[in-house]
Amino acid sequence: MPLFASSQDLEYAKSIVKMLASPELKGRGYVLGGDKIAAEFIGDEFRKIGLTSFKKSYFQKFTTSVNSFPSKMSLMIDGQSLIPGEDFLIEAGSPRITGKFETVQLEIQTIFDRDELSRQLRNASGKFLVVPTYNKPDYSKEQQIQITELINFLKYHPQNPASGTVILTKDKLTWSGSTVLHSKPTFTVNDSTLNEIKNISVDVENKFYEKYKSQNVIGFIEGSNSDSLVVLVAHYDHLGMMGSETVFPGANDNASGVAMLLNLAKYYQSNKPKYNTVFIAFGGEEIGLVGAKHFVENSFYDLKKIKFLINFDISGTGDDGIQVVNGSVYKDEFDRLSQINEEQQLLKQVKIRGEACNSDHCVFHMKQVPCFFIYTLGGIQAYHDIYDKAETLPLTEFLDYFRLMTEFIDGF
Image 1 (spheres, rainbow, N blue to C red):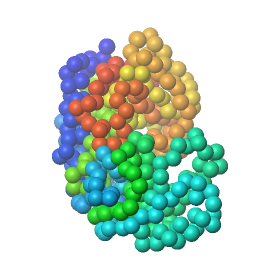
Image 2: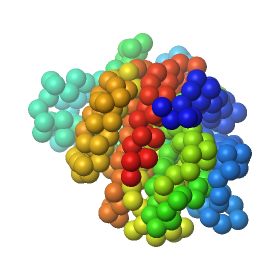
Image 3: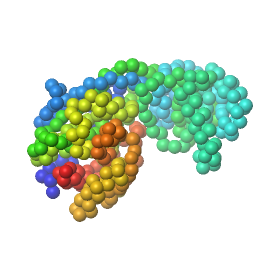
Image 4: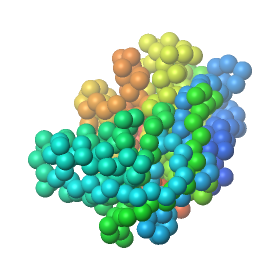
């Protein structure tokens, strides 16, 4: 067993998750500098561990456009106040809006009648359009495409005549970020307590940044062989806040990945690695891999020297093992990882997956850098919501996952 794998290390991981997912960090987004507070904390951990910086600082600055909601976030339907994050979400690119509006109730069947749809859209001018809940299996694939196209038009197209849109759903509410500002607001509302909607009152303030200043956090440990690099990455940003009260903590996504990154940094600081080992905590992942893209375009080292890169994103459960994106692309490496797991009986399974451009590894993969994106399976299902909290994140298989990773990395 690696020298560093102990219950003390699990406590360190828990402390990192607790800090990064705490209310003080504002969801590590773009309200009240939450991302900067997180980056400074990680940079301080890099310093304590003893990582070397490539330049005078651990920080690589970049700018990005981004929309945020720092203050008012109120939605009232027929006199009933709804709770942000619990009862409704606002589309991340929505503008500010205040007022009371009448509604036009759209029937799903109307979407398939062009003339009637056009009439109802014209009638929605100055009002809110309400899209009812629908059960996808009740409609053909062609009809589902038509429904999706209309919803996207209502959300994103400036020629939508309505003042805004409410989309009713029975699905789990999951939020996202946006680097663009749309012309009309959209709300997704849990329809469990709603009947026919007659009036909507809204009071929302946004702040759109053309060039928000953010940062990656980068350090390294010199290895015995400096000809090649092993690169370990995890994004530290999350969704931030939806108004002044509603925080999206992001414990599993991705405070847990940062906890794994920092644990590995501590381990390799005490156990000199074979190759120069780089540790990167990326910003801007949740708004389009912005930090990773900036790094690849302005790398501190030759990307061709990377022997292998591992991206840790969602590392907090593991009851059902781990999923390895790019496992089928780098089959030899996957087979070795799977063999280590089987021989040492660490995790329930090491599951193979093909390419997926769903996290920071993607921009490296596009540059032909050998890489895996690994995430844990099973356990809690909180994701991109207000329930992804430190106190409910089990870190069930964290130590076995950590052990598997050190054995795998040491084998390069």
